[in-house]
Image (cartoon, rainbow, N blue to C red; front, side, top):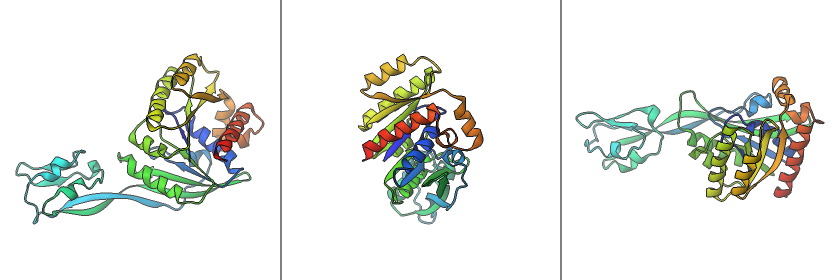
Length: 289
């Protein structure tokens, strides 16, 4: 499994992932997993409609009041504040705060907590046919207003890994949250996408720290190269024991490919940007072989 990530949003992580997926799919059977469940956009970049929807359900507790002894154990064990006690210690559930962890269910001494379910999002499995390339896109998506990302990430990841393939390419969300760590877990290689800006540098350090803590091999990809100075990025990457393996030039052609809804390696196959992405795909394929 190869993961594409980046501490900062907007660095071009999904652009790299989608174009890399196309190039790797030329070499073997591929599944691209879009695990940015709060804002998945790989299907937009690939100009495909999501298909084969399946719900992501989590446990929602209901209280069987005739069995409740008002001990308060359920509220004490709830770490999200979803289980509240009234002044006379009658428990009430706030569904949107519940993470579905089942702690209240297991701690209740009288089995007064009954398991229900709540749909927090969906996963999709979409066949992609772009130019002469075919692969499978698995997408995780939260419902509007939902906050508990890990269940959706894990279910989408499991669905992606259940599809037979030679290569599994994961596109994570931005940041260094537990959902990003869940996405990265099990990766043979992590591609950390950054940009030559102060915020890009700050968040690159965060993602490199996370990867190091998880014991993952990392290649850094400098997107929008030429936009600003890169010496501090090089220094930070070296301090963590990694290297910048690719520099994708800052270019209007990337924006044009967005507008066209056609990935860069197809819309501008002979451009310098496409060449860098194809070169990166060659290096990744060597790792997988």
